[in-house]
Length: 223
Image (cartoon, rainbow, N blue to C red):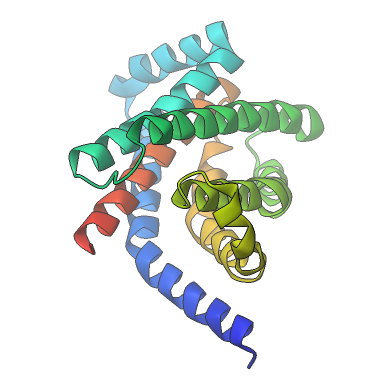
């Protein structure tokens, strides 16, 4: 086994071990949201509020809410826990820009897929959307882009320090990210696509925030 392949195998095993608990918790959380929507009438007003908010504000809602749930909330937790060790303002800006941009992209993805596959909640449509989401959009674009962005951030936003690590990024870190992304997000994405279109981004935000917070807590406990 080559050193790169050995490192990839070790990295994947470590990632699966770290992400197993978050994956289970995330699926339980997503199922709770789904059951609340379909089987708990008292929650209808809450879901309707977020659906109306998304319908009224469109992409602006997606950008702002994802920046908050994926960036500001986890950053605040890490900062309070003393996990932000360098350039705090730059890191906050990084998280806001990265996750806000991702919110816009995911919103455009959902719109594109609604045109491509329709808005039915039958299993065939959900399967098509999930496959395109995870095996095209995420695998080819978002996983590599987010992995590179976080590598650059971890090198204190220094491209000269980041460049020598690109080989390992391609051979090890991106494949690991893609695999763990499938483990964690495929079930959650299936549930997201069962929801009405105006509730897909709000549910994505909740699942994203819950997952990032769990990872932050686990990483804090292992420091």
